[in-house]
Image (cartoon, rainbow, N blue to C red; front, side):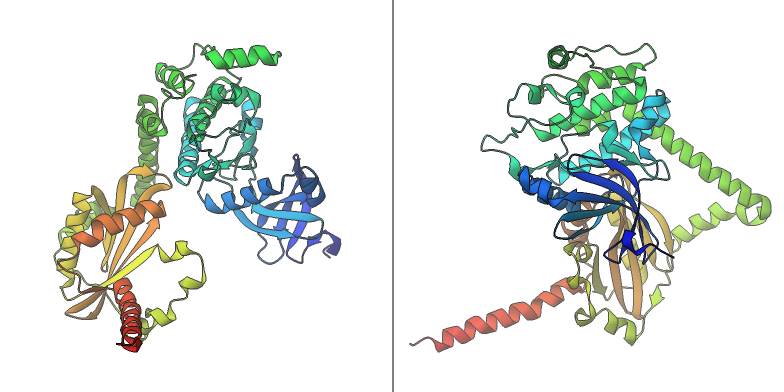
Length: 464
């Protein structure tokens, strides 16, 4: 029998203590509805109010709802009682990255994996106007698949937090990881300060110890201010060069995240990861060929022939399918705006083969590869990794009549803002020759007509 005293609001069963922070404790939890494992951060309301930190808690909630990324701890929901606030967040089974680094330095490929995931998450935060300001291994967690998850946004700042001079001014962070400009108590750019902290983390991952360390805080700050550190002999030359650019005491000349991704060590790590992925895929294909050799022999040839095939047989849809896609049956407006941004539909009087040719032409111009095509479905993928992984766009053609088709374009992976930019600035203009009408435009027309009619009526009512 479940102990009812440990069940929170009849939704989550509280378990063991995972950790303790300034304003509360973090417990392991389990949903009594879905059986999903979660972490529950329990915050004492009285303590928050006494210390005047209510705004900080509200800011943390708004930030965590804003930064949804595969390498950032997800906030599921927030609940409250008269005395407590509960953050229900993603459970990171692997614990803190600090515990792994504390035991020994990491191998170069493992260090690169975590660094790459950290940069991806931080870059995404910056794109949303969020600056973490307390990046350190203790705030980097690992899930059950050993993937990194950035956590603890309690000290984070938003773009709106900048003063009139365009800089942040609140001194915060952990001494060994904090940027020199913050120590000097001058205005600083949140993005540049985060990059410094990421550089310290990279050093720790590769060396197993801190680049700046001294029992005397004043001496520690002096070393940080002048960027006095020495790389161990086992550091590759490319890592030394990158660290010098990330741990540049001058924030104006410090390397940007875009340049980090263009650095030789970062690109070399990406290439190694790609080769490893291809090897795994090849091994899977080889094992499949053992059981069905004759099918595998001609698989690539048949796929190539299919890609060149002019005739495309799209999925047919009936009247009920069309009705379900009408605006009156679209329930996405009930939910967050994000759901409305992922898909777009247009109708065309062109044959399916002409639509496919046009989409292939657009993909080639935008340097997107066509990963898969079957039954009227095209999957377009970017060649470079974006802020939320590689952008992937599905374009599926549905046949209403042999001479009339509907096409649904939607994001299946990647950053929503990046997808929206490509859709509105590149794909939609390029499709104008074959599009009869976009569904979104069709929905706006009745509203515009109604507005025009209201204006006309008002003008008629005015005395002559």
